Length: 307
Image (cartoon, rainbow, N blue to C red; front, side, top):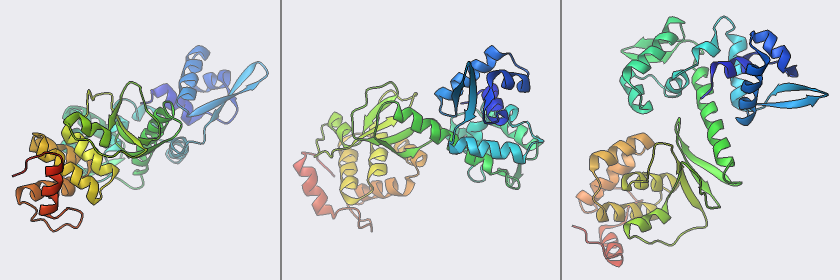
């Protein structure tokens, strides 16, 4: 996410430092610093101002920058730029509550050894400890998690802003996010989801003026299980739940995969209710789910056979 040199610049730069002054402070060549600053400008974390022939570097007002610089000031005895390289920020992102190594590895899709190495570095410096096998922050070091989350959010906003002038993030993870837009997006990594995607499974619904996209560099196409979860994130009301019920009735979706996706998106209860509803023919106490006879009529309208 950020290289050590970039973190060093953010930790060290005083408003108005020149590239030459930064190079002296950090004991790097000016060309090396110039490249690092250019990357930080592109990422929206610093900006530059012309002062004659010199270029002065100024930290941006991004919340992630403010959080990091405050951490550096408060914990000057810790080399945070060195500590936060590699997978460190990703591990910190998922340490929003006490978690085991396995839980963090599963959520971040990393090997246990990778997570273990990062956590050992944190533990050796007194940032985290363990209680009943779960890692948690010591003292006020939980602000490292806040920084990791805010930095990921900043990058998501930057990525979305690059492809649309009007977009809102509805859900996000370390390297993925779901967004609502008013315009079409045709860019690498963005996959359309929501109601328009249902047409891929022979389900045509009346569309709203909004479009929805999930950003993920790992995703090839939105699966039915993912589509169901995205739909509930977009709108968890009765109408969208009925659409998900139609999809689950119409398409053969692996239940284990669906429950795995539900856990990823924090929708375990909602997906469980949908599955129990179909299994029991509506015997679920939830006013956001239709009466069974109503759902049967809806399914018949879409020529879907239900048990």
